[in-house]
Amino acid sequence: MKPAKTRQIPDAPHSWSDMPWGDYFRDALTQHLQPCLSKLYGFHLLKIGNLSAEINTEACSISHQVNVGRCGGQLQVIADPLHLPFEAKSVDACLLAHTLSWSHDPHAILREVDRVLIDDGWMIISGFNPFSLLGLGKCVPGLHRRAPWNGRMYSQMRLLDWLSLLNYEVMYRTRFQVVPWNRQGGKMISAHVPALGCLNIILARKRTFPLTMNPARKSMNKIKLRQTVNATRQFRHVRDHDSG
Image (cartoon, rainbow, N blue to C red; front, side):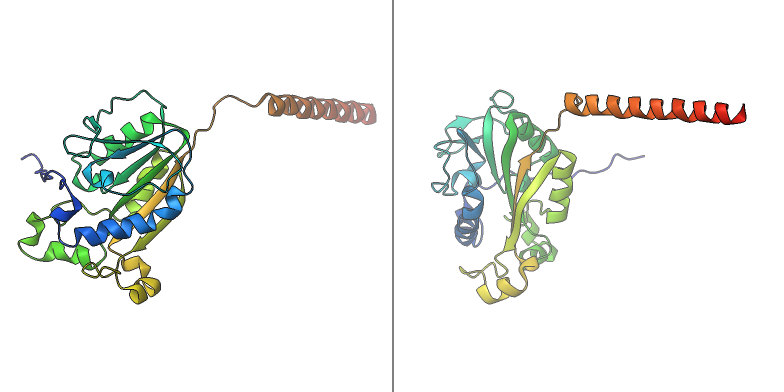
């Protein structure tokens, strides 16, 4: 049998300006990220990719913010997102602004981000909605070779499924910018049919549950077991006495 053909994903754009209506997408993301940024706290924030680096996150209370990517003028750390040069559980929050759309292995990126995030750390993911006017452009011949149509568009349900496998709790999610070529994104339409928004945002928090048994609960289980054994012995004693 012939091996399955894998679609090659091109490199991500170096800037939002490299794609049609990119400036509109950047401004809309910056605006709708404000509720997410207000929830973040800690010491270190990673912004992975050139598109993430251009998002204004000054409203975030985390002061130490580092831009990470393979190449770019706004990056402070040059590194492969699949192999982040940071220790495990050393980062409080991570921003993936359309990083997964142009990734050859999005699952590996999520696992690597999960590795560097502390327990109860925050992950923000944004991407293009395939069930939108922008997603319909993938059906137009020739457009699939240009950004943003040359990248992958993951539905919000698919991203939620990936996050659930990594044991993340979704704290906030939204869709917006129904009309991609409008700076306002079509406010009236976005208010009534947000599910058709071209952009989506997911804010999730890493949850870690210990596998060790709670000592207090363990002692309670012993007490309940002792009571059950005593009750069984009394029942047997009464039954033997009645039969005698």
